[in-house]
Amino acid sequence: MRMEAVLAKYENQINVFSEFLEDLPDVDEPVWILGACYDLKTKKSELLSDVRSRLWFTYRKKFSPIGGTGPSSDAGWGCMLRCGQMILAQALVSRHLGRDWRWDAEKRQPKEYHRILHCFLDKKDSCYSIHQMAQMGVGEGKSVGEWYGPNTVAQVLKKLALFDDWNTLAVYVSMDNTVVIEDIKKQCKQPGRESRSRAGPCGRGEVPASGQSCSEVQGKTLNLQSQRPLDWRPLLLVIPLRMGINSINPVYIQAFKGFFCKSEEDFDSWCDLVQQELLKKRNLRMFELVEKHPSHWPPFVPPTKPEVQTTGAEFIESPDKLFESEEEFEILNV
Image (cartoon, rainbow, N blue to C red):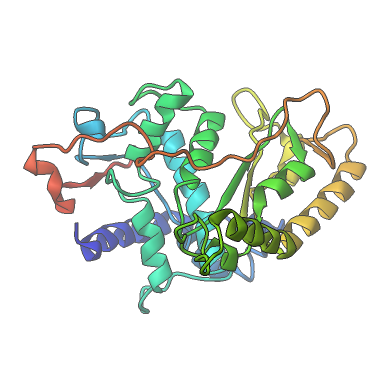
């Protein structure tokens, strides 16, 4: 697949989508876009630039059949998977390019932007493709081609993120509308990069000296690791909530967000802000924030990468040459 053709198709969709944005009404209330606030009367162009810079994924057809013999379109069943892709893509853009980054048609996009797009191509070997998500959903009790709910998508993304060594993202999905600070810090903190060097004969990054046993080297390395500070894995915090039956209950609108914490300081600040908001709205809490893991819950075990070579069921190569070219892809506006 040629990346240039994929980008051309994607960026054409940005331009089509922008035509709808131009019709935004002038309102007195501030407009919030993923944590950024705009006055529509004076900052409309900045708002439109912000929205154009968000990655947009929608139904497509004529991609390689999922699993070799499965669906070649996600029309009618992939809406929530595409929403999950967009949530994760926004987190990756914030992680690598920053929240203030803007897409500019007149400029060459940074290499990180292209690499992020590669993660979501409709190909079986892209780590967050519709293929990978559908295959991983089988473990969540969903057949390939079956509609997913928000929680299922969140669980699938949490598992797929374990195989993504480039982004090293921690995806935390809250249970019972409760965010546990202790559990998040367990999941996000990891040994420093210097302690994760290429393994030597002892299974560590150090080679035994003459007359030194592997067990001695391992003990020494483990002791050094315990003394080193832990890195913070960037956190995508997902809180699945039911906020209405057919539409969002208006009482929740003021508190509605998506959360991404690039550093531990970001997360601590978020916790402080949430605690303040929870105190203000005791009767309208969207979720609970607690310091310690509830004693009546099962023990929290940070998710780890399974010892397998693929992220889902084994993939079967499609013999149909029709699906080898990205020119055959079609984006569906339905």
